Length: 82
Image (cartoon, rainbow, N blue to C red):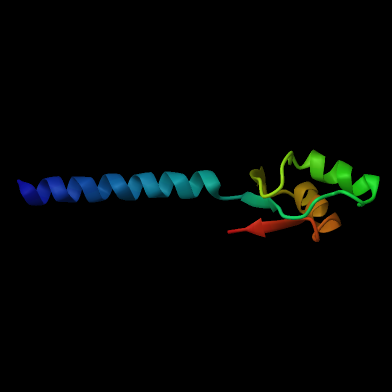
């Protein structure tokens, strides 16, 4: 019986990990690393549009060309974290 319980636990953990991977597939984790003080207004708007409100904040966004384009406009303010 103990081997059956152990196998069931392993199967449950694997399913949970698979669900997390599927949920985070196609997602970007972005980190706000530098202040927008003295940055052009357009850069401030892009950072705000990505959903940042505080420095060192990490947000999760869908991996779309629009989001990637926004990140490409402010690579010195935002970084993609794994």
